[in-house]
Image 1 (cartoon, rainbow, N blue to C red):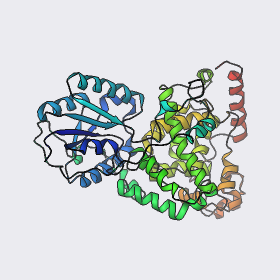
Image 2 (cartoon, rainbow, N blue to C red):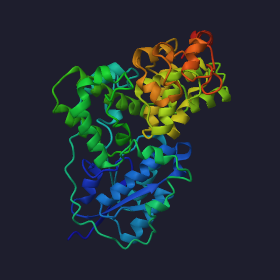
Image 3 (cartoon, rainbow, N blue to C red):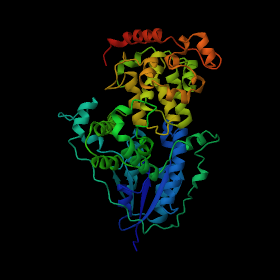
Image 4 (cartoon, helix red, strand yellow):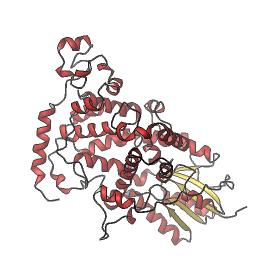
Length: 474
């Protein structure tokens, strides 16, 4: 029976399989698995409402996998870990690395303090295919464009999947620091909004494996084309599982390697690597969540109309594909990727509302809210990222709906007021004859809004605003 005790600190690795830190902590020692709610260091980046719901469910399942021996705390990780080390005479503390700037700063301080007191600290890569500092250009500088980064990534061998940990020594330990029951963390808040999320999501390691298997068996073969159509079930729905570490990118890559090579497989791999690129950018540009990567955008003349922002958040813009996406977000905690681009473009370009406001709303409402991906994707749409969509690329919500939801299945589901409107008017109901609207039971301005902006005029205003900063350096 091992006599030493090692701590494994769960963070964004809420799984048992392929968990390098958990495996290391469990080797020839009794492992103390802990999780800490750290809102002190997170600041503005505490988990949003939807993420807290997912976290609550995932912790419940993880605790079951650990035979009820997951110790959960709220407060300063440094203080809590130091107290645990003193009370249990801990030999080693292990964790899988996180890459958000505030976590890097916190972890570095904790590590130096523990090492100074004679405690061994081991950290591992448990959430990325490769470490951000290992991929550089020939001159040693980081990439700013995705495609060459993606090509270079293909030349680097990702880490091996770690062996399953030995948890036979897991047992209840006489710790003096009080652990908090999951139900007492109040992660669900005081609303019942989360009940909607239960109908559409299955958090936890088992849910992650089920989602991966379902995608590989049923949806991968139609992924490249089907992922653009929100009514089709062609996406993986793995993003929240990856964010919380219920499954690792290495596990997904390993599963993909067993599939027949195809354009669909390659396309999905590119999306997995876009996540890697987002973390890569965040590591090398730690102010990405708050600052434009293209500095000239600090002079962009945003209007930031709070009324327009509220209508966008509520799915009451008068543009059906936009409203469908925003209502899908509120009802399910998820939004289809094609529609994410449409609603984001509409906010920053047609409404001229700063991308910060859109990122903040997504952060609170998405179950897959991820600081790196959220920041990089919003900067991409806004045109202010290092490898961004050009600002003059403005998604037209009418033509986007007509092209990618031609029969209106997706839009009618989330905007049921329009379910009886003929498809030729579904994405532009303001152009429908009065008799057609009446027959469909629609009264614009009453049970469905008029458009909150003129799509052509707002597009022109956006281009004129961009022209003001176009010639600036940066």
